[in-house]
Length: 78
Image (cartoon, rainbow, N blue to C red; front, side):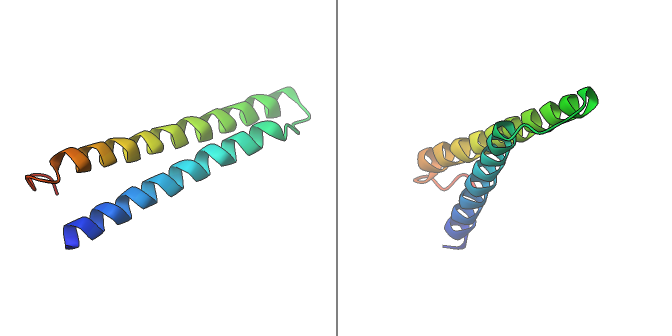
């Protein structure tokens, strides 16, 4: 029971953080407001890191869900 609760909490946390990061990056991309060239490069870097990080965290959540579904019956995974 505790293992299942830990899995669910971890999965939900990964999904929420991943979605937040992607939405935050997309919101930043929509509101371009950097006046100088250096600011634009820094801005684009921040947007791309936010979106890429969110996608990575979401992929971890999906992998965790797939792994949980395939290993649930034998109990071999935490």
